[in-house]
Every structure is written in structure tokens, then in C-alpha cells.
Image (cartoon, rainbow, N blue to C red; front, side):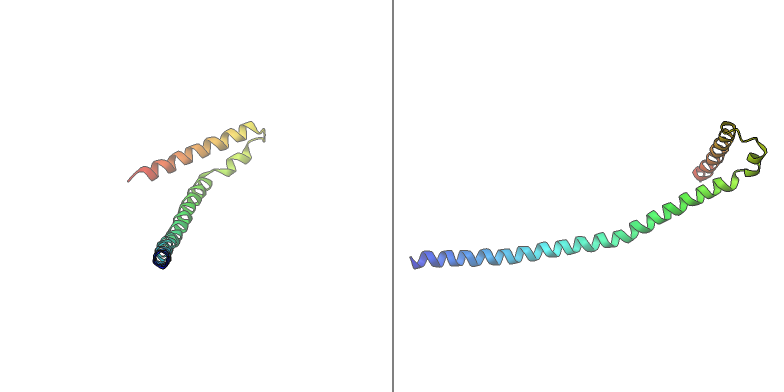
Length: 103
């Protein structure tokens, strides 16, 4: 009977020892992954800020190229003004795309 209890006691100590070692390993892996994610988070944030800045500059170029004084010369009949605005935006955006694709 004492031999069986001794075997179970050694087995239990072995299980606790393995549990401690493997939990330590899991904690180390999780902390490494967390550090990697936190490092990439800053790169991700700055890359998205840069893309927002690029989009803003593109929109600003479109607005700068629009001839707003031409719209005031028209009578405000809605559809005519809207067609002029959309045509101008399409022309300017096509010019911006062609400038961006040229290397």
C-alpha cells in the first residue's frame, strides 16, 4: 500500500512540475506575441495616418482645381449645377490618377 501511495505522490509531483513548466512557457510565448503586436500597432497607426493624409491631399487638390466662380454664373436650377460639379470633379480626379500612376 505504501508503494502505491508513493507512486501516486511522485506522479502528482511530476504533474505539478510539468504544469508549472508549461504554464511558464505559455506565459513567455504570450508576452512575446503581445510585444510584437504592440510594436506593429504603432506602425499600423502611422501607416493609416499617412494614407489619410494622402487622401486629404488628393481631395484638397480636387477642391483647389474646381472653378467655383463658374458655378455662381449659372442660375441655380439644381440639376445643371450638379452636372457641372460632377463633371469637374471627374476631370480633376482623372488628372490626379494619371499623375499618380506615372513613374
